[in-house]
Amino acid sequence: MPGFGTGPLVFAHRGSSAALPEHTLAAYVRALAEGADGLECDVRLSRDGHLVCVHDRRLERTSNGRGPVGAYTLAELERLDYGSWHDRTAPDGGLPADPERTRLLTLDALLRAVRAADREVELLIETKHPARYGSGVERRLVAMLRRHGLADPRPDDPVRATVMSFSPLAVRQIRRLAPRLSTVLLLEVAPPGLRRGRLPFGARIAGPSLKLLRTRPQLVPALHRAGNRVYVWTVNDAPELDLALACGVDGIITDRPAMVLDRLGR
Ligand code: G3P
Ligand code: CA
Image (cartoon, rainbow, N blue to C red):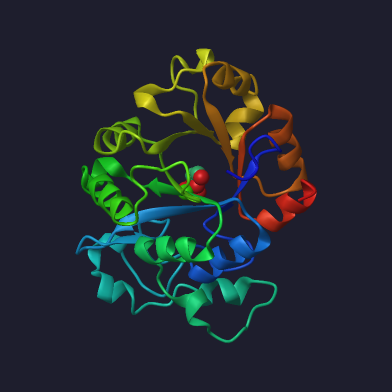
């Protein structure tokens, strides 16, 4: 993969989401054009069981819809505008509506876009609230990754999918459904045993918040000694980047991939 051995990988959090509306195709296309090594996205289920790229449980913040994402069918969600809220607040606000920056993005469409980029990309896919959805999200996610040839990774495939969750149970479920799929356990606090670098349920990558690393920087060498990698979120300015680099992380998840790549001299 790009970046290994030459500094941390740079992942665009929800796409290039400081510049363009999060989770839109335009934000992801821009991140790839800026040179990000990978992309991060959150997935939820529509009422009729489609995986859609939306962060919040409810629609209000990032669209002109109202209510929980899961209360609507895909066709209903596709009628909403997911870009105008951002364009009104962005420094370059008032740009004409472009379907790529206003339309709902499905995971299927994002995977097709990543394949079409025809270069090395690691896609980090976060499942939200797995306890609430039972195992539905994980089962559908693995089925989708299988359809795209990503559930059983091949060493020569330039695209790699990695599933992330704050829930150890979701990580365990993914490992059961697709044992070779790479997984990240996201962390806001350090669980018992982490002092010795051990991650539960077979996750081989830890995803601590920057806030956690600020207070516990020694977690990174402990995780490395136990054979794990560390992807930190969310790193959005120069002091935050300096802290992440001083900790020796392997991946940086950022809303501003161009800024991070520039400061890394790439
Ligand atoms: O990459 C992990 C990070 O995305 C977790 O927090 O709320 O942005 O999904 P959140
Ligand atoms: Ca996320």
